[in-house]
Length: 372
Image (cartoon, rainbow, N blue to C red; front, side):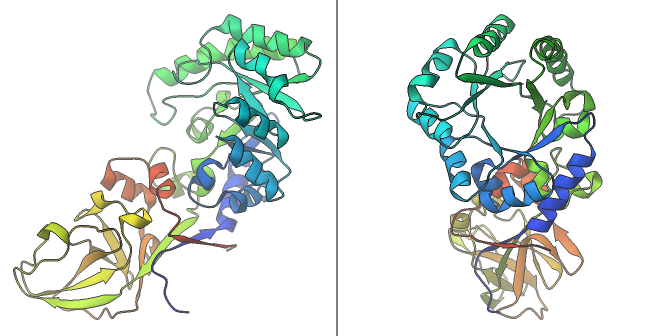
């Protein structure tokens, strides 16, 4: 098989196993919602959604109406929750897809019937802002009023009550328990009044951190793809990374001291060496901030990026003596020959989070889905 310049291999078996593992952490009948927004965090939404369902997820969650509609077009039949803000047109798209939507104001609630296609179900989740400070209402009285309004409505079904945590991925902080303490009594009160209500709050980090946050449903995103919500080694939490990013060595050149590679001459050979060119760059989502600041695996060995990452290429220092030849596979995320580079490592190099690493891979990177 000839090499490809930018290929992301997605192991759907890993996603299925990660979901089964997450399900095993849940008690009291709590269900798993797989978050597949942003094209499955860069992994391919429809493929990952199917794998998640095979692994035991009973719900899917997205951020936009079009993401929900796309899942339906690809035959996904699970319950779908659109978690984001919606315009009138978006609302119609989401409801036509049979997706469930989120409200935190009377204005949005009152607009639902106007935008719902005839016969489309209208299932509503009310969002309490317990301390995230984005969407949702901080007013517990308004939460109660919206729930009561939905219960009394002929067409709108009260389906869920939710919140979202700001610092669940920061073990030992005080804000996460404060949010949970603010939400729990309200959830218990409304669940008692509406036993059918699906209460949900936990993201991946909260799912691992606090069983009391599981309620009826957990919404896991980063963990289903085998990345650690705390930025550490996923294996420590029983997770398998699903994505492997590959390229190949396109050229190998001899360099003498003082010769440079790449734009701006940010790297120069200090001694005789060899430099390999890998045909992947920031146009593929391999960020320019990784210039002189990351490694690439070739032949199961790490080689440092040497010079500025350009749009279509990067260069690596192969050393004074090398057996590397053009055409050899290169791995930027994943394992090769017993060595590995995790998305978490790349994130630390960039001073960001693993979410951004995979979400940032562009459409120029071909996704190849397999079940290993």
